[in-house]
Length: 272
Image (cartoon, rainbow, N blue to C red; front, side, top):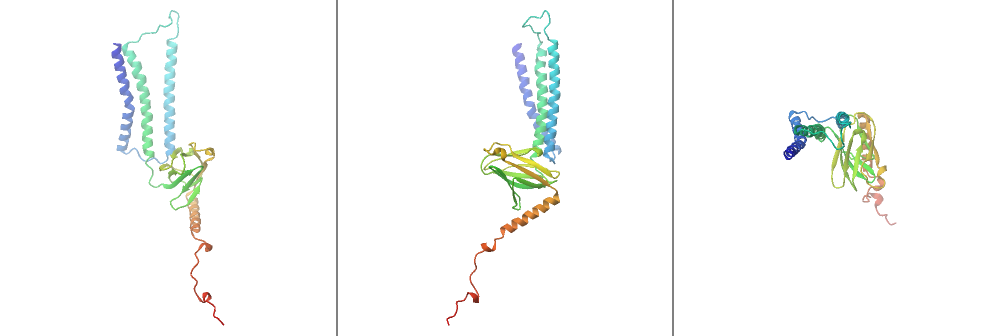
């Protein structure tokens, strides 16, 4: 009887353990098929929402199990006549219930978190088409940004408000991690590979950028800023930078190659 009970319990536990993965995939597939997995406008709001769901979820379950535990501590407290080592016997049905019910509760909880997290992750990887794309090359110990028109900045990423921003990242030396806490995004940059992250600034302001991967003795000083400007201010700044870039690309007079001498002034003087 006990061996059969063990086999049944083990089989149920194994079956329930696979449920979250199957259900999470089915959940994502169903939403994708119905068009409910639309691209998210702001990743930070999605991460915050998921975090709040997790906190509420584990708080409710934690309180419920704490109350059940406290009840059993009180119910099965030591009483006169109870000898040391004695415990109430459970029927096979009760034993199975005490295995299956808690297992189901925790797996259902994991399913809820996994399904929502997986759905959010899938939508995050779908970057909006109207994005501003900037290349980032990280190195000890600076962040070097290059815009599509060739404008470059160091340790300052200047972007317009109201437009999604995507960074295509690589590294020229070692592993770094571009972390913008205010936008809830962090992604590694590494030599020989191109990774990316994106965020959606909604209003002007400044936001800290830091390296979240130990990269050397000056790692703690590898910081920068995301400067979000209004659309008009950003356009004015970019126009100014383009003018400076164009001026820098024009060679100075002293750098121009000397031309071939021509004209009367270059002729040999006549003998007299």
